[in-house]
Amino acid sequence: MKKTILAVLLIIGMLTWVVYDFVDKPNMEASSDTQDNKVGDELDDTEESATLQESDKIGLAQGNKAPDFELSTLDGKTVRLSDFKGQKVMLNFWATWCPPCRAEMPDMQKLHENENVVVLAVNLTETESSMENISGFVEELALTFPILLDEKIEVAGLYKIQPIPTSYLIDTTGHIYNVAFGALHYKTMVEEFEKMK
Image (cartoon, rainbow, N blue to C red; front, side):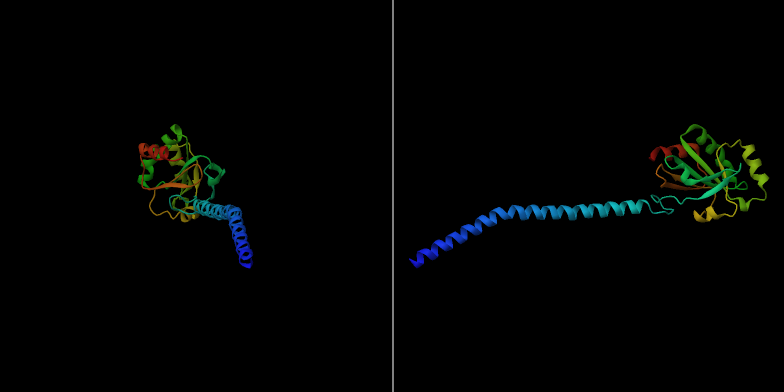
């Protein structure tokens, strides 16, 4: 009789364990999945955050956010690069004494007139012999895009300009799409801007 009671208790215990395991296991899996999803979501958020942080990194490499600056124009207005967020920008560094700069200017004017691109021409003013040279140059070539005066070469230093002309092609989000050293032709300018967002 004791053996029978012991066998019945053992069978009841095993059945209870099986029922408990069967009922509780899906809850544990669901809890584990939820936790895994939370961890997965956290990882996704972290990766997304890292990607956002990387794309918001200010620098001079392709994909970096272009460093903001403020300069006065030839006609006395104040311009910031960030004023043009949402627009494609050709940020060009030049001087009147630079033959390739002179050669490139008519194509930049054509780009300004014919394409949906903002042209900002930063003159390395400290290297010029006089302000009249700049005004005369602009008048002679009938330039109508903003001429920015980098009087202390601070922005040129910020952008580490070595050869001139140098152009930074900036997309609508304010990130550097490409950097061009030397004079660009109109066709190349258009092709480059058509590739970007």
